[in-house]
Amino acid sequence: MGTTTFPQPNPQAKMRLFCLPYAGGSAMIFRTWPSHLPPTIEVCPIEIPGRGKQMKFPPYTKMQPLVEEIAKNLIPFLDKPFAIFGHSMGGLVGFELARLLRSDYNLTPLHLFVSARNAPQVTPTKRKIYNLPDDEFWQAICNFNGTPDGVIGNEELIQIFLPILRADFTVLETYVYTHQPPFDFPISVFGGLQDPACTDYELEAWQEQTTAAFSLHKFSGDHFFIREHEKVLLQYISQYIS
Image 1 (tube, one colour):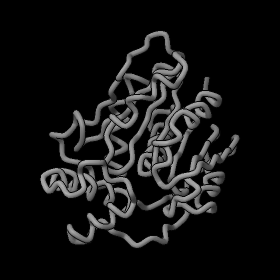
Image 2 (image 1 turned 135 degrees about the vertical axis):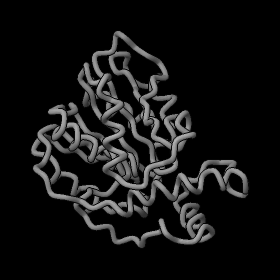
Image 3 (image 1 turned 90 degrees about the vertical axis):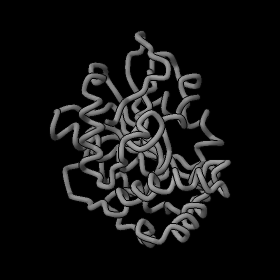
Image 4 (image 1 turned 90 degrees about the horizontal axis):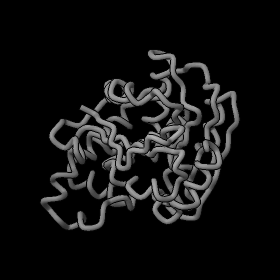
């Protein structure tokens, strides 16, 4: 059900960068990435069920089955060294994906990149929204500033997006962290200076999840700072892995 998409298959690439979107997002958010990264890196956006080319499949509402589904579909593409990038929800999914690949397949990425997501062991203080009535839930989503242009006020599109977003927030807000040994590969974290969703402490706490190098980079902007700072963000990524 969950498939990896290759916008620009690149047989010359030395490695693959698997990219996981934010809640409600699709693989399309990474479409411009290949043009800003060296040709040695093949960008592999992951489309998860319920959106984009996977629209006809029901979205997942629990972390573990979602990660198992992704891992199963990635196996054919793990014949080259790889790294994982995730923004917001994608950061947490990427973390759990790396854990599953380590425990079940004995495979680890070269690097984990996490953007706009608090460390998993830090208990979130924000109120849960996944079980709010539709109108209150939608208002809470709009407050994140992440709603795609053209969706706000468009009742038909809202009806398409609502169940996907609710499923994604259910994945996030019912997630239970379990203690496992830290990773032995580097973790790099990116955050927005004006992002109300992540404090410095919540971002810095990712350091506990690795015995290797850790770095934190902050950008001006809110939860979706990656839109304005895509080029610089990708410069950092290519420095670390190419």
